[in-house]
Amino acid sequence: MPTSEGLSLINNGVLAVPLTVDGVDRNDPEGRIPYLLLLNGTIARVPRWENFSTVSSRSDRLIVTWEQDGLKTVIFDRSYPGPITQLEFEIPLTPQRLGTDGVALLYYVVLDADANPDPALAPIKLTIDHSQIPVPSLKPVEFPHATLWGYLNCQTRPALNQGVTVNVPPQTVGIAGDICKLQWQGYRSLNGVGVVAEAYLEIPHILSEDNLLKGFNIVVPFRPCVKPLIDNDSALVVIRFYRGGRLIAQSAPELVKIDRTISGERLPCYSND
Image 1 (cartoon, rainbow, N blue to C red):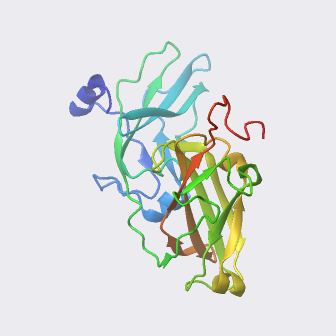
Image 2: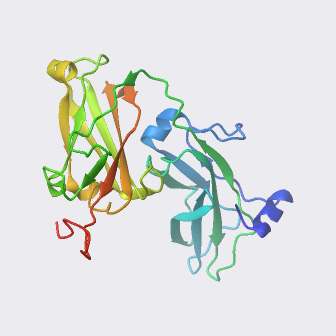
């Protein structure tokens, strides 16, 4: 939550102009993010603050904070030398940032050259819900080289440093020429919690009739997808079909566990790859 000082300022109505998020209804107190924005990301916009610098000898510093599940993360921190002529400032909200369901707070503060804060925070509430699937479901992917307990480890063959084979099973949705996009996202837990931002990749594949009838494999590369994942980690993989740039179907996420530790060894396997 914002600091007690910030909440006091909010309750007293002394607010900087609140930021907005593209595609999110300003009149929705829950700040529900539309599903396609969860897939593709969006932009938060901070309007130029009231006491902005009008002289070239002063710089204003804009700090934007994302808060979710009690964890505060500064997602934007940049100084702007005066005179400031820019009317608003764009803050990207990536699909990775929007990847965890729940409620988040987004707010900003401005510091002048003497580190004096702008006298108000302007938090907005954002609700993230990936269950609002508006399209037909695809059969989820499979991991043909995982163990019976769903692990990829140092004994996996082909070796993990050669990539992870993901099987896309036959589908009843789609036609030849549609685009399948496979999304891999790593997590710092065994159950898909705690995003590892660098362990992310989206791989496109043009579908053929044979792909739809028999299924096909996509090899997810070791870097960047597996290298950051070591012990008690996991990944969620989703496939989505697009036609003419429009989402037409998607699968439920499928989880695979990652364990690259070796008993008695200091470093995980494939550390030098």
